[in-house]
Amino acid sequence: MHKLYSNRKVIFSLILPGMLLFVFAILFPIILSAYYGFTDYSGMGKVTFVGFDNYVAIIKDSVFWRAMENSLLLAIGFICIQHPLAIITAAVLDKLGGRAEGFFRCVYFIPNVISVAVIAYLWKFIYNPDFGLLNNVLRFFGKEADINWLSQDYAIWSVLVVLIWHGFGWGMLIYYTGIKNIDPTLYEAAAIDGADQKNTFLRITLPLMKPVIQINVTMAIISALKQMETVYLLTAGGPGDRTQFVANYLYQQAFKAFRYGYGNAIGVVFIIICLFVTVVTNNIFKEKEV
Image 1 (cartoon, helix red, strand yellow):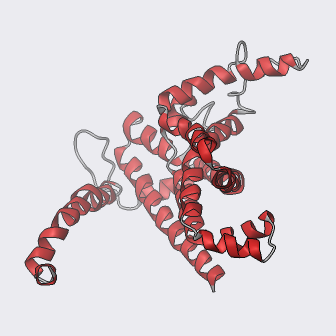
Image 2 (image 1 turned 90 degrees about the vertical axis):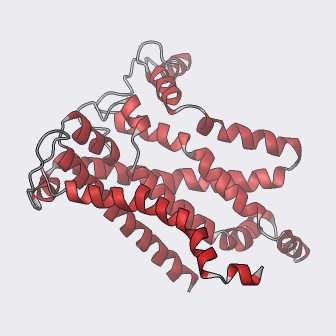
Image 3 (image 1 turned 180 degrees about the vertical axis):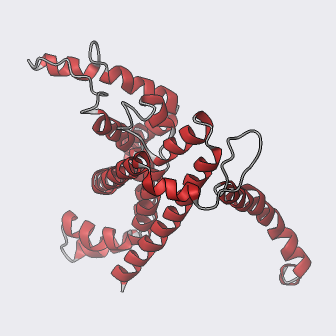
């Protein structure tokens, strides 16, 4: 077996499929996108090289910066609201045990199994100003509620609630898996030393979960940048551009406004931001470990 795996031809044949997949499914599209980002291509017809004009236009594009602002708000919501709740829920489920543990684990993950289209239209009905569930609940408690939750004043906050709720299951499941991989003898030793659940969580669970938290935080920030399907189906970036996000704006510019070159330039900026976020997050957690 050692002789087999030390053979260069065998090694090359094993890594070749992965290399080809990376080149043609990831690297080549990125290079092609970078090329179109320097053109005024509309998706059809002639391609004209325009240099950095698209990138200069992005810097001056107020809608793009609104989309970045909304993505930042969502990233803060993920990190400060969704993830603390997810890790606490995961810790509670771990202690719960039995059939209840499996039941609630499935319940929390159900929104991630349901189609995005169903989720979007479900929340459209919840937010409906005439017969929506939210306004009816407010009326039940004696409030005169005819609020349009997807109007200019409330739309971004309503969308953030949907996105934070919808992604909760993934975050919780990743934290739950991380907690399950912690050696139970550490908890037993802490119990013998007289540590209560709070100190056990703060001094054993959280420190050992740093790699998992790092991955989840990085994924959360990138996910906030690439929100598209739910936003498109719920508000399409409206009213106006109040709920615009980067990925949704890229789609609208490339395939609706027929500014394919400009859309690809946004895609290149998006890739650069994702790489920057990944590097910064890794450095932050590295410094914390030191």
